[in-house]
Image (tube, one colour):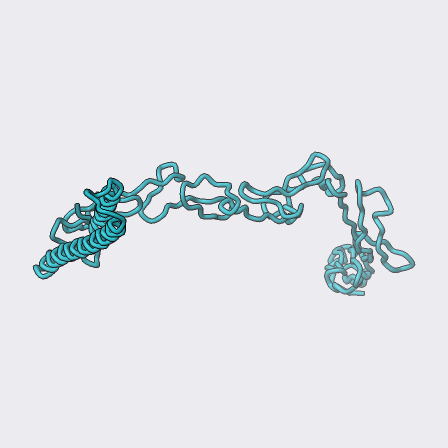
Length: 328
């Protein structure tokens, strides 16, 4: 008990000669102020809750607990109908949840059919699609396909599967593809077709004499008497020695041709001589039988046929030589 000076009435205590002896739980000059025991000693009701009262205090259990035999025990809120679908009891509290296909409403108790993909994509690689029955499915973006009914999406190789409209080259990209052209070509405005580049119209292409455009490329030309160097652009005049060698080569070709003609002629002459000897032998054989006033008609025919055959053979071999050396 506390004794204090009190000039007037002693409210919550005993007056002793202008003094006031306060009861427990009170303080002040005249014992008129309540003592908050819970503030003075925060361990007064540990581990429970201290509640201050007028002139005293009391210990109480935390929310979710109840006093039983002087101790605080957890209240099983799920024993009552507190959740719409699923109730999970926790220490001093509880938690409501919903079955697959339902969402917990804002009051954290009721369950409603809602967007299953609103708060989670459920590990879908690309798109989570909520269904009216409260379930969901995964969907892939354009240019991808679903792997074995899973949540994974794989790229479609349009180039490998010939699912493109490229005119020349196809380059696969994630979810799509792009077209390209071979060297010497360029893509048109539609990005699909390729057209030839006229390199000769490019001022950076320098041909000494003349530029000739070709599909996908170009070539440089030189005038007569010049040759194209290894850079494929520069023309160089042929040296006099090369021109002389070319004329000498042509002269040698003509000489060879004449030698071959002469050789063929000699062979034909020999063939004619052999034929005449053969005919004379036949005449001598017939003369042994008797005098012959004139050459038999059959022998005349044989001689004419032999001569005609030799002329044919000469002409045939001459034509072969002409074809070899391209002469007429």
